[in-house]
Image 1 (tube, rainbow over the protein chains, first blue to last red):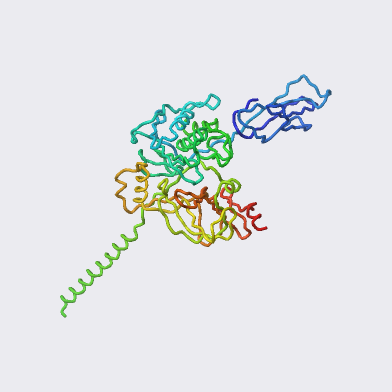
Image 2 (spheres, rainbow over the protein chains, first blue to last red):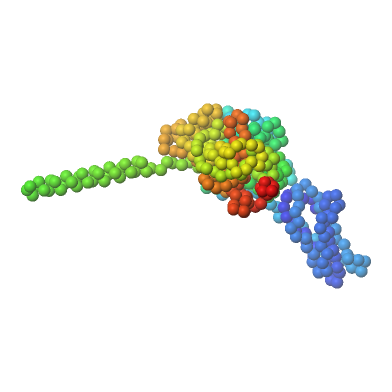
Length: 248
Length: 207
């Protein structure tokens, strides 16, 4: 079984032939035992096993001993419950098929570009979404996302602010009102010259601009804050799923 | 005084009374008009939040009592409101500062005009329509939630501070994570769980 999401998994072995005692064990990609289930009932289960993306897991089913061999069928099921990325109550009202951004500060222009591309064309295991073209504009009034820079020892990598009117008129709370414009600040004091970090922070802030909230219990989500140990610099399936839920 | 004079006098008194009450009403309405508040919510990518990370990254860590807000102004880096106040220091857990230290954090409110002026100074091309500039009775306020600094005069906190050379200030970096309220047992409030917890650094300081 190849896993591409972070979450809690449930492994089930059932329909064990009558009178037989089967056991099953879960191994990681390197063949190390993670957990086993060894009851004598006709069903076995491993609950709430944390699974991580881009990992292979092996389930091994075997009889208790030679007396319990059977040629009859049994059933195995694995179900993953991903730690989903939450979304704000309200949404971005701009045209998702043609998003334009305006760079007031171009320090991280390349990383911003890469982050947009990541959202626009995610890898196949992440899925697809309805984002169309994302381009830069030099006319602020045509933009839906504006990028600014700052430098402060405030322990933030970036911040996103939401506005109802295009051009940044009337600031709103994303759980109370839809928005048409976002201003994203990137903090060069903390990001420095770390290109990968800059791309990840940009992708995280773009996620906010679409309406995704923090997912601090899933370190494989781009919406997990770096302070909570985010391990990725690009979007994952749960982030794209959240976008898809919001904009089907 | 005849009947007509009496009526005139009563009429005059009524007019004076109506004018006086109306005047008071007008004066009250003008002075009592609350300012139009624009609260600033934001969503960010925080760099550090655990006590261990903050201890390692901070320039100064103190336990002390917040005396009160002294100044609220636009921050020189992002135009959003920051507030400064003094803390009387009980103990220095990292770095040195003396008996008191002035701390600065995101929070408070500033007039709209100040926000716009700082945005222009920063070259941020104020993200607001020109008509908004005429709004006089308007303020910008940082929205408060469980993760905002909640600096209450008279309360004791453990405070993790970053020193900014450029701005010559000790800044409370990670909002509420860097200014944790202490209870009588000396435990610190965790903004995530809203529970008080024992911090290793505070236990060490007791010894």
